Every structure is written in C-alpha cells, then in structure tokens.
Length: 171
Image 1 (cartoon, rainbow, N blue to C red):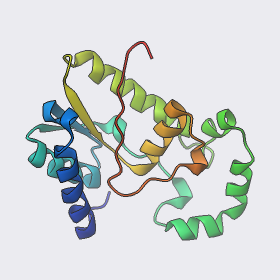
Image 2 (cartoon, rainbow, N blue to C red):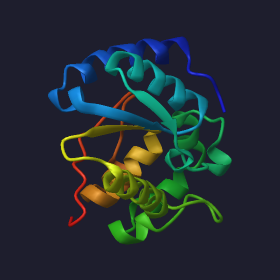
Image 3 (cartoon, helix red, strand yellow):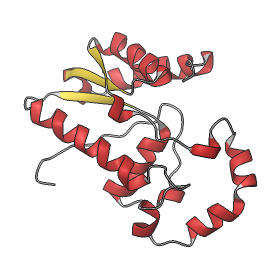
C-alpha cells in the first residue's frame, strides 16, 4: 500500500475543484473510498473541497494484479504480450469472467462487489443526495466494462478519472 505521490496530490486538488463545480455534487453527503492509502488521501482532498465526510470502504479496493504488482504498464504489456493477445481474442462475456492469473479476481467479480456496494449506499440515500466513490483505475475499468458494456481491454482511464453513475434499483 503506497502513499499518494506529490503529482497525485496535485491531480486530486485539480479534480476536487472540477467536482465542486458540478451541480450534482452540491448535495454530496458522503465520500466512500477504498481503504488503501492513495484512494483514501485523494478522498480526503475531495472531502475538504466538497465539505463532506469520508468513509473507508474495503470493497472499493483495487483487485490484486498478481505478477503485475510493482511493474509499469510498459513492462507488463511487453513481458506478458502473449497473455494480452489471448485475452484480446475473447468475447466480452468470457473476458469479463477471466482473471489475469488463476486465483485472482475477474473484472466481472470486481464490478459485482462495487455494484453491491453501490446498491447498499443507494438504499441508504435520500432522494436528491449524491455520494462519491473514490477507488482505483482497475475498479473503474471493470465497472465501465460490465455495467456500461465497454470492452475491458479497450477501457483506459486517466489519474483522477470520474464518471457520473446514476444508480437506480430497477436498472
């Protein structure tokens, strides 16, 4: 679990300003954040700007990346080119249910735990309230792929990326 780098702090402060300008977040009552240091620190920066509390939520943690841990994206794609070629040939449903390595969480499982968290938070929320989830890129990419039908290997996020997810019980 690593600290948020100075560049990440600067990115979070800029994003906090963008978020505070969004009308929807004027009614932000709570920020739920992965309990890992980088996401938690980012959430605290957002909370200061938005004037709300941060609740650590372990279900927003990034999935284990197994042998990829500690490697740069370039190193991963270079060293594991055959794996990515195999994954790219899979259909959407098969890819979402296939982890990078045996014993790791699949993108579908990652999305399912975040969806369950969103459902719980939604059920506790009042009409018109907004909440913010602060998580990690692989979590966001899994949700975009599963909930919004994007091809998992084609989803790429940037630091402090965000999306407006209007959660509805009937959807």
